[in-house]
Length: 326
Image (cartoon, rainbow, N blue to C red; front, side, top):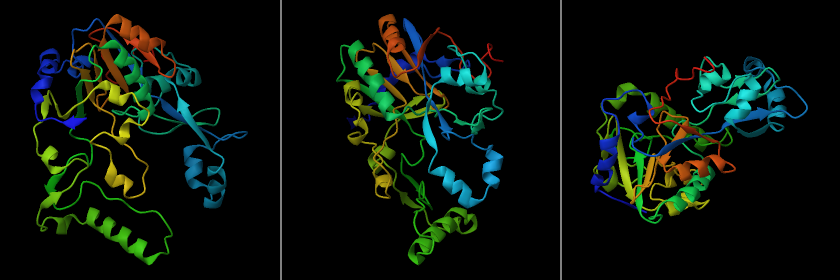
């Protein structure tokens, strides 16, 4: 997979995306496909086998030794939207919205359930690497060009692109023994640089590296309504491997240098050269939308390990569009 400056490859998207926005999924998802599927990003649930977890407030007020004892026994697992609906007594349906489904007042917060478990919301704009691989393996079977296509990444992802500035795109606070003077000094300097807005004004700007090299960071973007994207030439077959993130140009090597596991952002948009389908993981969506043939949509809905439902063309996925659980 290689970066491309030929952003004209995405002109067809612009022709089929609503501009100005109409507050339907077609603000970001092209119109004109036979059918559409919504692939729900999983949430997560934390349980304490044999015991009830305290409320979030009680946990935060607990003795540190007691919470440390409990942490070792916590079990985290993925939670489907249909499971969440069962927990909160709501209805899982194609246009379900997380806040309405869970009766949450703040969609970004952990929710303590009545039976003593904690539920965390789905990721927005990100599909877990193994789920992307499973999805890509199905998509590869529904195109005549599985090895040729385009992968787009939204330019606004933190640390993806370099920039001219006084400070880096992100700072890595190192974990370890707080009594280590070298570690303490390192973290103190990072904390000061982040907070010291007064002195930052007087610092001379210089090039701050991102995950992608400078040539890409300063290169052309595919400009869609409200969104700019960096484009890469490559086939969906390259994303069908479980370890696809090891070979993409945007692999997060700076994070690995600080001890993090190998990783890469999941693509924002993917399409094959024959345009048989399109995948869109919009940064503000907690699900991924696929447009394609009816056969493809049926295959996605039937796939084990994926939670997907068909949605109609013109569907809205805004926070207030869940009329069933309103």
